[in-house]
Length: 72
Figure (tube, rainbow, N blue to C red):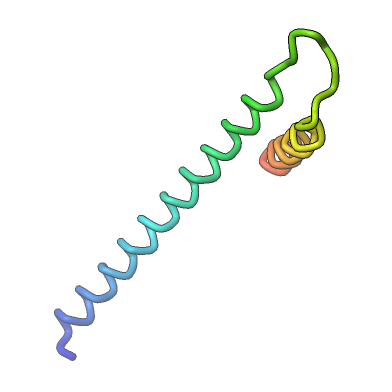
């Protein structure tokens, strides 16, 4: 490969890596938003439903992710 091809390949790989990182961050943000909506949703009658375990797990996941992000 010639020098311009090597340089172009390096720039291409950096661009692909940046796009992949951006997509992963967007997916993580969407997952945290969905978990936040799940945690904030309350049943009107206050009873526990079958989805309670899933909701509790989503809330624990959200809290763990936010705690991990807060570490300096």
